[in-house]
Image 1 (cartoon, helix red, strand yellow):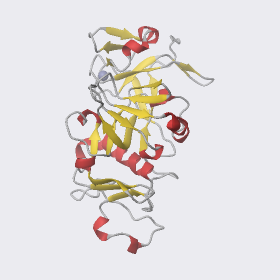
Image 2 (tube, helix red, strand yellow; image 1 turned 45 degrees about the vertical axis):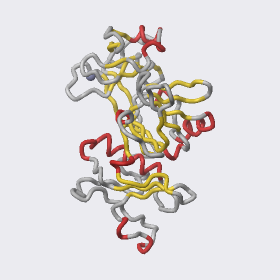
Image 3 (tube, protein in one colour; image 1 turned 90 degrees about the vertical axis):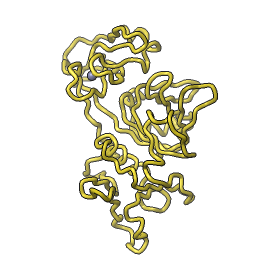
Image 4 (cartoon, helix red, strand yellow; image 1 turned 180 degrees about the vertical axis):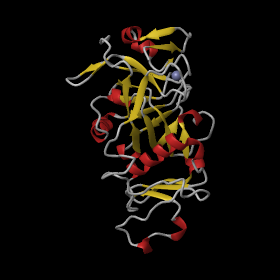
Length: 287
Ligand SMILES: [Zn+2]
């Protein structure tokens, strides 16, 4: 898209307007057609390709304003198999009625797996399952099959010390950003949603899901390099429009109508990044 709606007053915003005044528009723009939150995509030019600046959004199906294509980037945390296939899998078709099936890792002895826990997702500690990959799979499941997530299924995430960080059914420990204002949150929970834009202030990295009242993940300075390295980011811009899942403490500071989630380890986070392609890739570069 080359035009979006500025949510404060419904006026139009195009890419030069945005480039001139990003602070004004950050987190406050949406698609004219389907009202889904939009984000700004910088222009780039390499030997092989160039793309003009544009806007992208996770449009609802059939939206006529959609001119861009979003493609899930495959990284080391690949969700569709291959050499990097996760070491447990979520298969909702196979487990209709019973929820998620957690496979026994090949290198574990069967007598170590409690039969009652066969249908419980356990990750971290000495469980043999990576928290990162487990989160990535849950995120994929949520993004693809949101309506069918088995809320009664149980999940346990264990710290290296053996202490359970998360232990409960999805309905009690898993929250979309949009739900955070309406419920009492447990000490630690799994949060998920979309990142709309990122800002660095006083060395903290803020991963914002939208405007002033939408949830924000705070990545402290000591985690910044890990974030860049572990998720293979060239720039924080790559997280614009990404889906995120994070295990952490969600809270609302006194006097602010906004929720924050503090990132503690990058292994407690996962992203689904999107590659944006515009329909008219050969357009002149604008910004
Ligand atoms: Zn749309």
